[in-house]
Amino acid sequence: MLGNTLQWRKEFKMDSILDENFGVDLNSAAYISGADREGHPVCYSVYGVFANDEGYIRTFGSEERHEKFLRWRSQLMEKGMRELDFQPAGVSSLVQINDLKNTPGPARKELRMATKQAVGILQDNYPELVARNIFINVPFWYYAFNALLSPFLTQRTKSKLVFARPGRVTETLLRHMAVEEIPVHYGGFKRENETEFSLRRSSGDYYKCWFNQNH
Image (cartoon, helix red, strand yellow):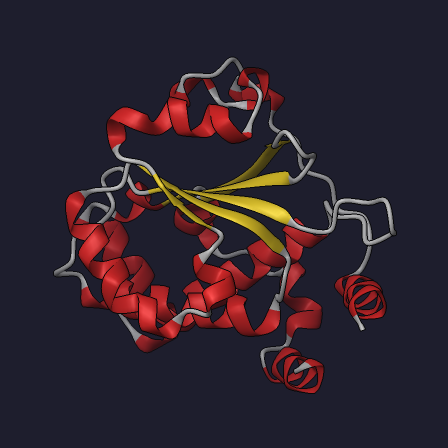
């Protein structure tokens, strides 16, 4: 598997991905802030930014833009990796929180296809780097979409999934995070200006550390 990942990183030109700027639409769709109760960094993805037609077309309106979305999603994981510590006593995985409020509906096939491909990339090339994948503000139609996606997921990936309807967001997040770490718009005390992001080591170093710890 490591050989396939290294080949993918070469073909996808991952060594330079952190230098790329994907524009305001994608840059506003995700951020890293705080940690869960076990110290895992928390990465938020906000899919409602793709709700309007203009923003959606700018992101998914062509094959080139579709590829750009996948590169942005991979860049986000690379940034998240820099928040991790692969030493024996360190935290070596992160938590992903996906806010589906106002996310484009099931008729948007381009988003469904891109999501499926992004899941494949994360599953194949970032093994065990996600401790938990929490979906909040989940609309009813998404459960049907997840049922279609489920056959493509490993059992390990499925075990990390958590879903919360709009009325259960704060309750669900409190199971995994202290109230001081939850953003105010999700019912917590953390304000936007407290968001932190630091880049520390190269992704190549992290892959070496992860591989040494797990093989």
